[in-house]
Image (cartoon, rainbow, N blue to C red; front, side, top):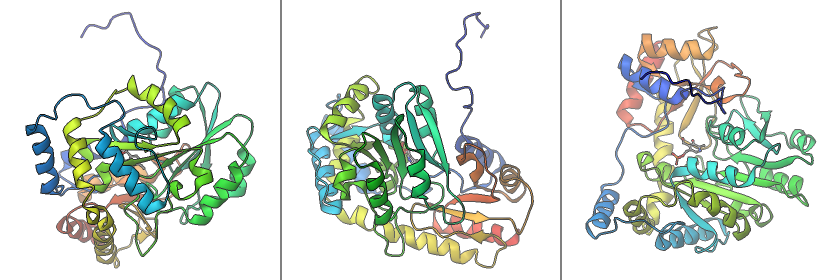
Length: 385
Ligand SMILES: Cc1ncc(COP(=O)(O)O)c(C=O)c1O
C-alpha cells in the first residue's frame, strides 16, 4: 500500500501487539505446548453448542435488544442474587456485552474524563490502562508485592484525592491467582465512604476459586455495589472464550450512562449465543461445579511439578499458576519465557508485562485450563529444566 501523507498521531504510543498474541504465535511457530494465553484447549459443553444451533434454526438471527435478551438478563439477575444477595433489575441494571473487555472499555469510556485519576493494582490485566489513556484519564499504579500480592489499604488511602474517579479491582486475579477477602472489600468500602469514587470490579473468574474459598463479589457489599460496575464473562465460565460474551451489572444511574456508550460502541451482541446462555444458566451445576473441575487441574499440575526447580506460588482462584524460576536462571522473565518456548517447547507469560514499570520478579504465568494430558506433558518438560 503506498504511504499517504495523511497520518494520525498515536493516542496509544506505548501500545504494541499484546504479549498474549506474541507468545501464542511463538508457541505455534515453535510447536510448543501453549500454557501462555488464558483459554481452554478443550471444548465447551455440546449442550451449549446444541442450544446455539437451536436458537439459530428457530430464527433468533436478528439484532438483540441493545441491553441484551431479557431472558438472559433475568437469569443473570437471579444468579447474582442467589449467590451474592445483590439485587440488580434486569431491565435497567444488567447489560450484555461483547465479552468483559468491551464492558470494561465501556464502563471507563462512560465515566472517566480528562484528568481523572484511576487507581490500578499491578500486576494487572492489560486492558484497563489503554482504555483509561484513551478516555484522557491518568492511571495511578499501586504495585503489589510478591509472593502474596496483598493490597495495602493504607497505601491506597494516601493516594486518594479530589481527582480520584475510580478504583479498579480484579478478583480472582489475573495473573497472580490471588483473591480479595471479605476484609479487603470492607476496607475498600470504608476508604470510599462519603466519596463519589466509582469501582470497576472485574470478576470474570468468579466461579474459579479453590480450597473452599468463596468469591467476594462486590454484589455482596451494598455500600460498594452502589458505586460499582461489576463485570463478568461467560467465556471463562463456559469454556467459550471465542464467543466473546460477557455482562455488566451496575445501579441504574451508572448503567444509564454505561448504555449510552454501549449503544454506539457495539449496540448489541450475538443473539443466538445469548439465547443459548439464557437456557444454559438454568443448569446451575454447570457453573457451581466449575471450581471442582479446575481444582483438579490445579492440583494435578502443581503435584506433577513438585520435584521441579520451579517454585510455585499459591493460587486461590483463576486458572493461572505462577512459577518462580530464580533457582534456575538470572535471565529476565521475557528472555527466559522466550527461551523456554524455543528451546524447551513450552510457552508461558512473563509477569513483568503486567506491571507499568515492567518489574522482573523471575516469575512466569502458566495457564492450567488445559487437558490433563497437556498439563502432564508440560510438567514433564518443566521437571527437566
Ligand atoms: C482479568 C480479566 N478480565 C477480563 C478478561 C477479558 O474477558 P473477555 O474475553 O470476556 O473479554 C480476561 C481474559 O483473559 C481477564 O483475564
